[in-house]
Image (cartoon, rainbow, N blue to C red; front, side):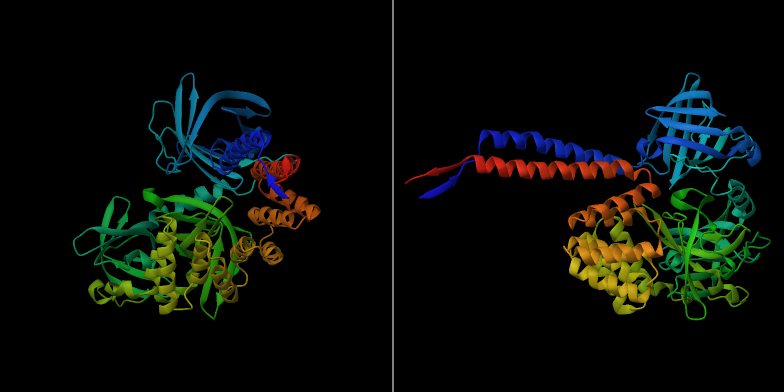
Length: 537
């Protein structure tokens, strides 16, 4: 006697119905993570307003209860609950900077926006005028600048960051922040970053990797282009350099002390990212890692972009406490790194200048900084196999270099080499146990390897360091689901939603798709049993 399983028309019909449904859910999930209208949807309180360089006092804004609501395709402005205006709006989140247009009966206001967690910054031009190039206004610019904070359901509103601080820091420091451009022997620009004057005679601090390939260097300050005559100080291992530009009577920044900063306070990065001059981004100070007596690494949520490297990190007292070096940006968070200003303070006063051709910059390709920067660029472009080889080169040159084990571990995850990822991320934890991102990615590697209990422990460790890391709570919840620990999963999902409301839609979709898939498997199993034919041969 033989038993033959026959696939029925009914089984095929279920497949035809449910597979497209799952695909549709997947596309909705992808859209939920996109930073388009979905990310802006909801009600926002205006916490700062500036028009043509003139700021409205915060107490007046608070008293007026000014709000903006994004509902469907409508952008509605309110004052003390009363509607002031209503317009259709559209956004393009794949442009740099991201754009937003408000379409009204009397014309279209063109603008740009920056979304950082639950804080939204918008710069708009009046109808008939060109789109702003950066987040700043001045007299006669016909532009307005808004800073908004998302109002969550059942939330008692209180402004997060003082826009007066960002405005004051930008106005007081922007003239001392410069663009640093490196050129090759043929005069071609090979790299560009930010920097800042620390001496009135043209001493400029920036990152080593910005000028590492240079045969010639120029500094752009406002409408002036200054030649660099040499280097005052170089520290390739810590990615720092002090240049000497030919100039005098220049504005300078005020240097502060990292040790006086408190975890959780606001910090501000002024830089020239992606060709936008004098852009300010703010975030929270998340940690200070001390290595030895002098080396200090700052972690912050102020976002960085290409061109931000070398920019000054300010505290609220307009004092530079760090030099931006690198950053991580993904769907759930921004995390950036800066070297403490303490590491260059005692080098600024040196009068010794080494010419560029004698400085050793030509040997940059033999340095760990070069290969790490190359690995980062490969990773950004999705060429993870090349990135892995670059990071391996870093370890051969200097096994104690910065975040290389973390970088290598995350690259291994991208190519599915989870065993190697786990090994390298454990090494990263040994080097820096207080870095939540490492524990989070270790959890991902464990989860991808089917080691769910180990993944849960890694996620818990990340949460113990950074409790407000929404993506960790989300992945912890999904891992609990894998083990059938549904009560724990619900609790973790609630935490993810509490931290990041935009995750709510994705969580619902994720749970729904899982439930439907379970139903499909059960139905197909039943269908298969019902249509087994027992034939006698």
